[in-house]
Length: 61
Image 1 (cartoon, rainbow, N blue to C red):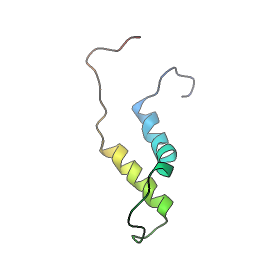
Image 2: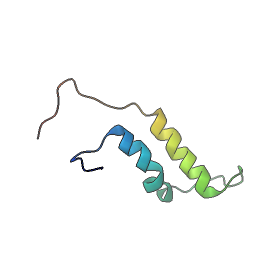
Image 3: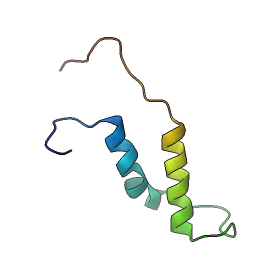
Image 4: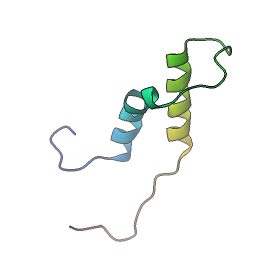
């Protein structure tokens, strides 16, 4: 992303709703809003509620 050879947690959070929303099928569609909006909101909530893992030592490849 942006010329980097790696992605950051912020990159994942920004792209997850766009990339993953089409993979989810909401069960209860009568909850208001469009299905697409609801699914994107769910993905945003999952990403924001998920802790970012880290290592004490930098990982080198």
